[in-house]
Image 1 (cartoon, rainbow, N blue to C red):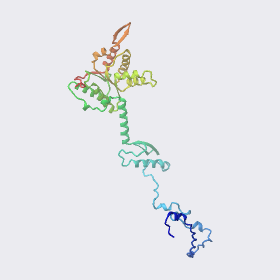
Image 2: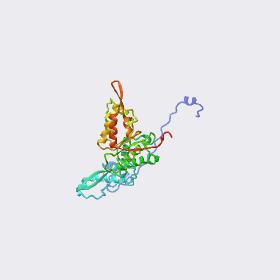
Image 3: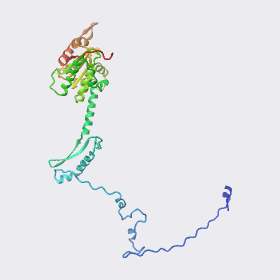
Image 4: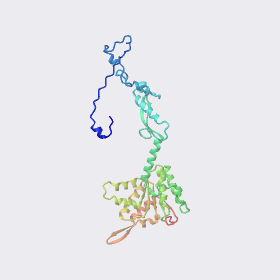
Amino acid sequence: MALTSLKDLLTRPASRQQPASPAPATPTTLPPASPGAGTPGTDRHAAKTAPSATPGIPAASEDPLAHLRGRHPAAPPRTIRGIYDAPAAEIAARETDILAAEEAADLCLGCHGDCRQRTYGMRLIAYAEGGRIQCAMQQCRYGRARRERARLEKLFQTARIPAIFARATWQDYQLTPENEEAVKAAKWFCRLLTERKNLSPRAGLYLYGPRGTGKTMLAALIARTLASESIPVLFLSVPDYFYELRASFGSTDRRTETLTSAARSAAVLILDDLGAERTTEWTASELFTLINHRAANALPTLVTSNYPLGQLATALACVRHQGGKNTLDDSQALRIRSRLAGLCEPVRLGGKDRRTE
């Protein structure tokens, strides 16, 4: 009966389907039993030895990894390859450490700085000493180079070289007849320190000359040269140094003590633009204490200033208020000048103001 509409489908009485007749059973012929085997249903061990009914899955009595053996052959056991001058019992006792060291050596094969060790540039080594196996961490040349770069970078950071001259080189410095002697003196100062020669008590420079003639840049080049030779150096702008000291007053992190201690004990100290700051009794006292300490200990010191040594006392004199009057006090300034004269070799740097050209 054909259905012409959805209504016919919904109103048509459900027809009863007769259950299908079962198919006639097909007799199953069992293969003849092999000699010595029991008939099915009578051998109580047949369930244990019968093959799995599910293809690809071994029976319980079979090796559960047998189907994987051919695809993933087991790695051969590792053996010690090196020769170690130690008793066999000692080598056997330290077998794990020796194998770890030899595996670490394998990781270094073909390395060009792309280190695969757990710690960059460091690998475990095993060696025999006195009949015993010893283990230690060894640094490779790539590790040494990386740590040297990090050490130099830290030296440059602590040197406090002005950012404008952070990458300056000697080739960047414009040589003129007016500054030629100063450049020679600067290179002599660097050579004296880098060659580690016996320093005389006057192992310092006092570079002076008009403003804008390149004194700060020359001092920065000296600082860069020394830092690149692993010589700790501290570059301080004198006005900025006193500003930092004032700003640290009352702080709880001991910044004042840290700053003054660093300046006093620096292997090489550069004081840039001495005389540019407004001198007070306090600044004159702090400056004398610093320079006196370095002169007494013959610590290499370089100073730049616009003033010749003969005029420095006037530039550093401070005004003292006493009895309602202002008087010019140059006593500390004269002492500072005297210490610098014994500590530094004065060298004039002439020329025009490069900043206004």
